Length: 40
Image 1 (cartoon, rainbow, N blue to C red):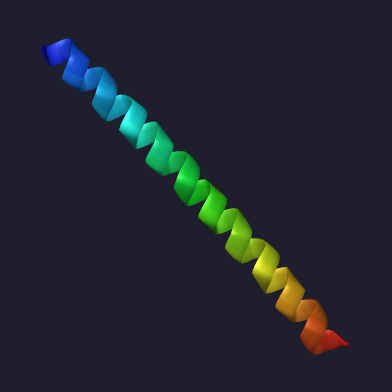
Image 2 (cartoon, rainbow, N blue to C red):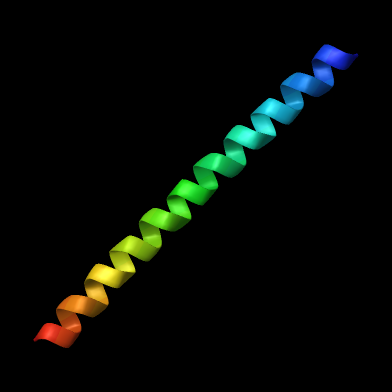
């Protein structure tokens, strides 16, 4: 039982991590997009 909850916690943590990295990547793309808009 303990092992099951441990693995589910790990997978949830990994999913959250990937989602956070995805969000960071999206904001980086948006920042670059706006910077190019301001420059031009």
